[in-house]
Image (tube, rainbow, N blue to C red):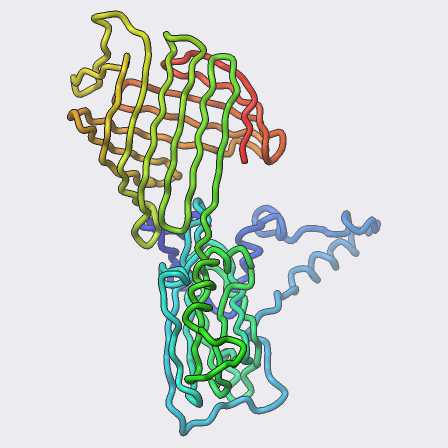
Length: 401
């Protein structure tokens, strides 16, 4: 799947014009289904059956004939055509998101950033959906069954959930003949709660159980953009280092610290408050504050690669900067402090080496660097060893929430 991603983060279907699950994405994402080199696996080993050579040949031929069911095969047993004398409202949605931050959206907007979509009662709503994310999204409509435009003409099937694979484009349509606010959302519920949803407002209805519709919609919007909190700390032999972060879909408030056990190692706290922007949310401008102390000799001051003197003994500095996610999820960070000091930094956390082994690194223009290796014990704990240019070698227990 990574080979199908462009440099700007958009998916590239390479001219295949995928739709209706006709390309078996399981084969793409899980090649073990077919075996190496595209050869079908002998599944007799999984069933406990013993087969001779002829049986194995038959099994291989049977597997070669297997077809994955897809929406293009479906056909309604009766005519599902919609009236041809009513107006048609056409909408297009692109399913978007950021898997690293786990934010999901439609047209790069979450529900809290959009109004309800007005629909006149009695008109046909035709919706074209393109999945520009690396995950499948089963899109579900409340209140109506929709026609899946799959080439079956007047016998197009009716559904209320359509599972849309990465790079797919699908079209659905329905007659909006029932008044109400109707929810349209990804049925993977943590995608829905992250913001991949919309509300169709059909007609100017009145609901005695919902006297203030505007207030109710704001409550729904708030639920799609709830803040979440994360914290971790490494209790190591050479000190403590960790971080905390409070985020919602766009805004991020984060702080990280390094606390030594003696004045030579000192301590440092960096805080950044920023907003993610752009379709892929790989760019975050921020304001920052850096506070650090480290006992150094009277004339012992370090210079960065630009020749600027960085007084690490006591430093309180405000900064402006940005963070940009490079390919391979390497974060590039650039900051300018109020005293003119410039710092550029490259960092990557959680590099998967094996199922439980993770790596990481950091290097910046202050001539600071760090490398670490962690072994995951469970979702909240890991054993971590690292080398820090200021703190030296250390090993400890990392805890996260």
